[in-house]
Image (cartoon, rainbow, N blue to C red; front, side, top):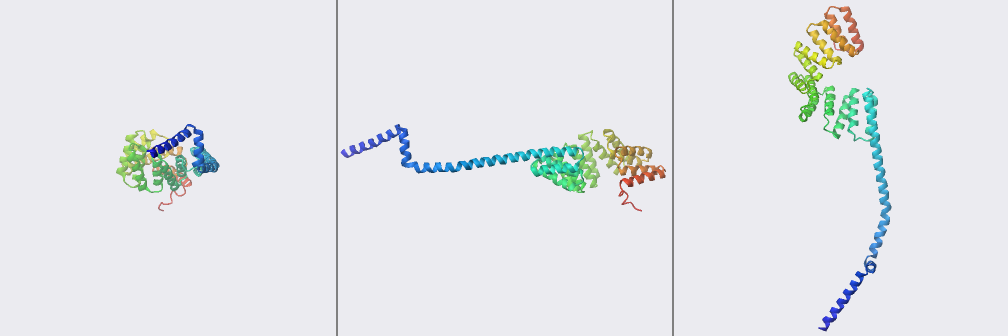
Length: 319
C-alpha cells in the first residue's frame, strides 16, 4: 500500500507542475518552444524571409501581365472601330488593314474577324472571307448573319452545295429568318432546282412581305419558266419596294423585252443606267431593245458603250 501512495503523490506532483505552466501561459509557451519547437520555428522564419520577396516579385509580374493584356484589348477595340469606319466609307483596303492589326493585338474579338470577312468579301476575296467568317464563328457560333455571309461567299466561289448546306443549318435553328430563305433560293437556282427555289422565295415573302429581294428572286424563277407576265408583276412589286436597285430595273427591262414591249423596256434600262452608269449589261440590253425597234445605228452606240465598260462582255459570243 505504501508503494501505491508514494506513486500517487508523484503523479499529483507532476499534474500540479503542468497546471502551473498552463496558468502562466507566457512561461509555458516559452518553455514549450525552447524544449520542442525552436528548430521548427527557426526554419519557418527562414522560409518566410526567403519567400516574401518571391511573392512580391510574382505579384508585380502578374500585375504587369494583366496591364499588358488590358492594354492590348483596348488597342484592339480602337482598331475595330477604325476598321468599321473605313468599311462604311467603302475604304475596304484600309478596313482590312485595321481589322488585321486588331487581330494581331488580340485575336479573341468576334467583331474583328467578322469585319475582316465583310471587307474581304467586298474586295472580291471570297476565299479569305470564308476563312475570316469561320474564325468569327469559332468565337461566337450563334450569329446568323455571319453564317449567312459565309454561305454567300461560298456561293460567289461557285460552291453552291456548300452554300446550300450553310443556309439549311441556319434555317434548322432559325426557320423564321427571311434572308436565309432568300439566299437558299439563290443557291437552288444555281443548282437548277427551280421548283425548290420558288418555294424558298415564297417562304421569304411569307415571313417578310416587304422583302423586295424575295419578290425579285421569284420573278427571276418565273422568267426561267417562261412565265413572263407573272414575272413582270413580281418585278414591278420589287422596284416599288426599293426603286434604287439597278439590277432590278435591268431584269424588269429584260422581261419587257421578252414580252415585245421594247419601248417600256428601254425606260426600265434607262432607270438602271441612271442608278449605275457603269452597268455594262444595262447598256447592252438597251442596245438590244433599240435593235428590236429597228434603230440599228443607235443600237451600235450602246453596244460600243457596253464594250467600253466591260471589254470581256462579248468574249464568249459566237462570231
